[in-house]
Length: 331
Image (cartoon, helix red, strand yellow):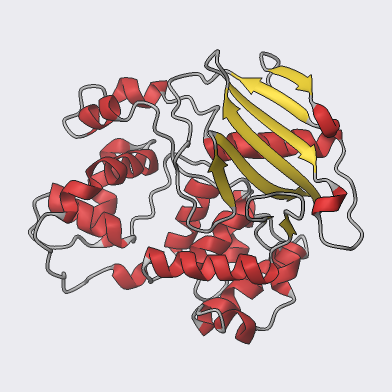
């Protein structure tokens, strides 16, 4: 935790850290969370998560002075389901604060990216229109990986529905003392590792991907692999149905690697088809080649373009398939 942050103690044993973003920051006041594990109420972001198995409630908001306050507190026992719950300590709260800072992108230094592309014909107007934009990320890498598996080769709305079902069925919840709907965390690797593939398939996850998710969860739960560490990538890639796209989503959304581009994504296949004037959908190889000039910001540039150009591109005529269409490589 940087020394320039202002750290205070709040009620209920909470830890409150006030952070001044390095550059313009847009707080997610109205952001939708399709998986329903986070929410914004009255300008306050809320997320329930676990650090080393200990439950923590986190909140974040903008202060009048332009800083972002991030608070973490041990989850009140009365708001948790019956059972033994180890109380979160100081180190757990600090880790939870860091995870939320990562998820919101509060500490991202966007200045090198903005300086490099301030005259770029595509990015310049997008940067000016969305100066506080941040890539959506998850508080921990396991969550990004698990959700990437559920998103393989299906529509985003269907994937989000699967994610919500998984959270409702197996995610630990918090909320018996809240007037709003309860908050729930994404199931831990150990929880998913103990499931049978049929249980996930019953929630509409394809059987092959259910098997892949369970195998990956067992690798993580056993300590043989950490999704937050690229050193463990070969173990994950060795699992059938886990391909480049899933690992690229993990790197971008879980680890915050601005250069990681999920090139096999249908959105990029269409985007490059339009922007490169191909008159058809691009291949994965063409997407990768087109984004080479944006290194080491390929993932960030791609997300900026999707966020800023998505509506305009949807109004254009549909592009035809390429004979080597890459959509089935999005795994």
